[in-house]
Image (cartoon, rainbow, N blue to C red; front, side, top):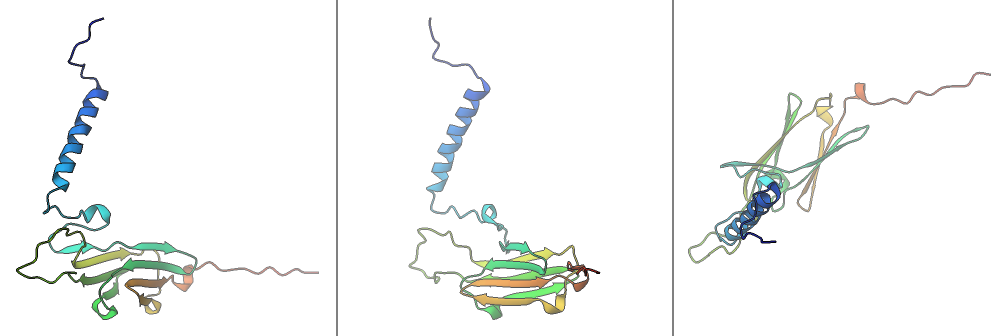
Amino acid sequence: MRTSRYYSLTPYNLMRDVTAWADVLNRTLSQNETSRYNYAQNGGSTGVSTARLPVDVWADDEGFHITAYVPGISPDQVDITFENDELTIRGELPATTPEGDNQQHVRNELFHGEFERRLTFHVPVDADKIEGSFHNGVLELKVPKAEAIRPRQIKVQAQS
């Protein structure tokens, strides 16, 4: 049987070629020293001014727990506000290398600049009892649920 040097354009062959071409482009672009870290893909945005701060949030019966990494800044450089069921965390991460005429970035992957994160709570919380702690660049917030919506244990007494 004679085979053609051109194969048919089945979906598999076409997808294989597109994938191979995409791999070549990705390798070429990643070698460009001006290519920047894709912060949007890793929880933030590559926006012009303000990045979205990645956070972990979990809930229990008492309230919500929020953790965010903010290395290189002190607690007084973070602005945390709560208004209309929305918690806002703002700040600015400093550049890790000083600016100078004789410097050339070999890699520029760490994010620096302004960040902000807004979290809306769809259950009543006790805003007066929100607590925050800061240790080794990790910000932790505790947002307690309002007393009215917390689960209550009902004790049943036996009658004889």
